[in-house]
Image 1 (cartoon, helix red, strand yellow):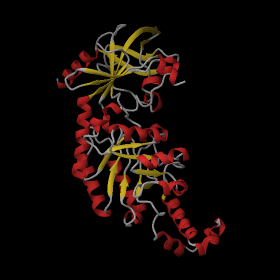
Image 2 (spheres, one colour):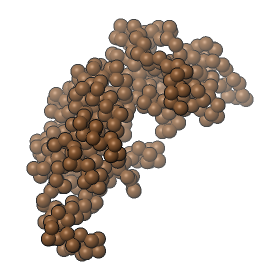
Image 3 (tube, helix red, strand yellow):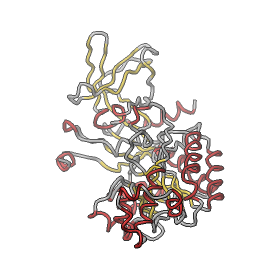
Image 4 (cartoon, helix red, strand yellow):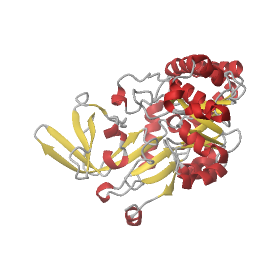
Length: 424
């Protein structure tokens, strides 16, 4: 009954909005943030918003009341978090451009490198205490989901430094820094170094300046996957975590902490154990968890096209333009009043008014027939939608609306022709 009342409030609030529109549900967003704040407080960790999933900067002051800051994938996201939230700003990228590094070093608290080569190139201009290296524990926990597209631990991954490469690179760096052994650093001669000498170099720790380790291996997963990964990290990289050099451990993102079935208590216990065992600060970088189930996409039925047994609804929203994960993952978004095909009397294929033949959102059934002019509301549309949308075919971008807890809607941003033209 409560869900029906909430859906009715949402539909009533959205009837006057232009379509298509993204609508951020303030009440649900705050509910997620309260859970994350509790984890911060009880586990003693720091949680950062991964802006790659949700970048509605108008809400950053609200988000900043509950968590510790933002994390970025490059200069523009780093600037956005620094300027609009003004708390901790972290950045990780598979590689950095020289032109970006000076500004990143000025605005970021932590800069995480993907390779020892990039670390060596830029570490001297980075903030003291804020230099990290991304490790790859080679521990896949996602099965065959999406053919590995979201698995940073897949064979041959370009993301993170595996244990063997880190050990070899650390030993090689240590020998090269010893002036008496410079001549031994040629590849063939280095490969012949005695094992005990390599271990002696490893005891000197990671390259100078590194104060933290970072791993990111999860995607929309519960605590069990994190637990498996953490224990693998301890087995492979425990010698570094136990050293005085490492001051922080960043466990990355992909944690669905605000999902109803997530084991929050186990997460809190895990973070406490890591902090106490290794005397390190622990960071988490959830993106989806911040705005999970806290957004909608409102669309209107423009036409109905019958072809054989298939009845197509032509919408002014598009999978390709406005919810790309529907085609990329693939992903079937929840739809208010919609059910699996064939479950209810009226089944339709929901599509768009782009020219892309495969711009299909999916097949849904309804208790009542759908007519031209009806409005449909897709759920869980705050994450990986606004940050990934595009204007293919000249399709307008949806407006961005904030629905307050009392149901009142505030227009945050609308888009027109100049926004389309400015992207070309």
